[in-house]
Image (cartoon, rainbow, N blue to C red; front, side, top):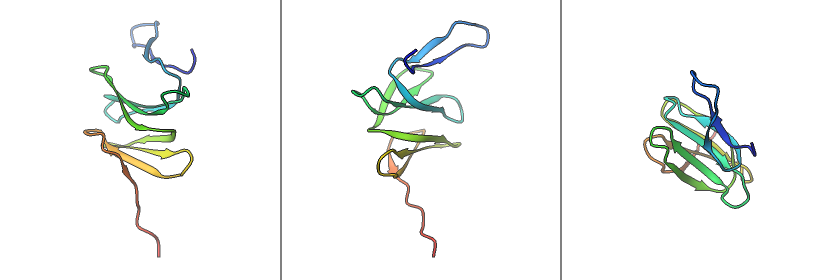
Length: 104
């Protein structure tokens, strides 16, 4: 299926395609409303969010990312090349760099 993202309803055996682009990784938000995914097709590489109610997809950040982790209100992801950790709230797509306090 060229690494597309699909789902099957509980009362069905027929898969429905959610993301047609080639995806390297994905994860669901805690409330299962949003699908966060990394497109890795060589043309549109980036980190995206799909609203599973409206089926509207939004690019959050261009580039290559991995380690998509979700919590109650946030999604975290890591830059493949720079090892930076980014995060944003489900309620908006403002991406910030995670800068934890240094251990001394």
